[in-house]
Structures are given as structure tokens and as C-alpha cells.
Amino acid sequence: MSNDDLERFVSDELYWDPKVDSDAIAVSADDGAVTLRGTVGSFRQKREAKQDAERVYGVKSVKNDLEVRIMNQDRRDDADLRGAVLQALMLDSLVPKTIDAKVDDGEVTLTGTANWQYQRDEAEFLATNILGVMSVNDEIDLVQPPPTAGDVRHDIKKAMERNAKLDADNVSVDSSNGTVTLDGTVSSWADHDEAIAAAWAAPGVTDVKDRILVAY
Image (cartoon, rainbow, N blue to C red; front, side, top):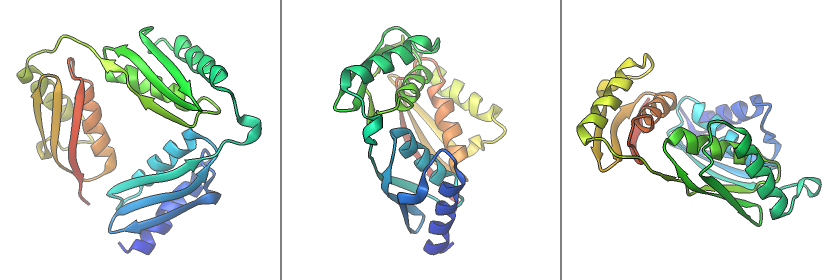
């Protein structure tokens, strides 16, 4: 696929997404590596744009250089933003009460502890959706008694094998002290995300090193 074709396909995908205002987004491609430049009106749009680009066949990586520019009527002071983030976290039953947030010049930093990666993901997703947020830093620590490395590898491999979308034979799993390393190749970003999700879902996992290549 030529660079021009890939740029056009990504631009079309961005235009197709009603959650993203693609008018001020420029797309460039170089041998499967896509870069997004321009401005969007919210941090959620910035994340959505990256996910849109990753869905396009032929995209190997996405560099997200989009800038978030909040309209004056949507600007909020840090105290107001922190209150809105904490309220959203409190109302979501998936988020433990051990997670806190601080805000500095529109930048949200999530702190505290969680037992599962999905709880971190949920907290980050909620903060991302708050109007006026410029960026989100996830500094939540995962704390859980670690099982043996063999148990972790076995659990992750079994989860991959159960997944109809994923060819588990092409992904290797290594585990040490709660850190899981995934190596290998998959045929799409969807498969890549499924493998990462399977690793994070294993009990005792506190970090996942992603060395999976997307090869079309």
C-alpha cells in the first residue's frame, strides 16, 4: 500500500468517526508509520483519533502529535476539574476508593493503588471524558500478591487460546516478578490489543512489556 493511499484511508476513518472533529487534523504516512498533527477540542478526541488510525489496515504505528485546545467557554479551573474527576471516579463501581486525582493547569494525574489493570483503565477513561481536561497521566500503582511466574504464563496462554480472534501460537509469554513480556507477531491491531488485554487480566500482573509486531 502506498503512503498516499494509507494517508487517505486514515483521513477517511477520522472523518467517519462522529466523535472526532477531523477538520484540523493532518495525516502523514511513511511505510506504515502514521503521524497525526493538528488540533482537537478535547483530550478524548485526541485519544479517539489515535484509535481510529490504528484500526486502518496497513497501519503499523501511530505517533499522536495532536494538540488539545480548549474553547474559552469550556475552560475550567483546576479545582473545578479535580472535583469533576473525583465525582466521576466515585460514581463508578469499577474504580476503587484508593484512587485519587490531582490537576495542574488542566493536566490530570491519577494516583493511588488498584488491584487490577482494568481498574486503572476505567479511571483513565473517566478522566479523559471530563470536559476541560488537557491530558491524563496514569500513576496508579498495581498492588497484588504475585503468583508464580509459571502460573502467570499458563493463565495468559490459556486466555489467548480461548480467544477466537487471536492466534496464540505466534505470541510468546514470559513472566518475572509481576512483569509480563509479550513477543511475536500478529496480523492486526485488534489482535495486538486482545493479547495485551489477556496479559493484563492475569492475576498478579503489575506491568506488561509490549514487544508484539503488527505484520500484515
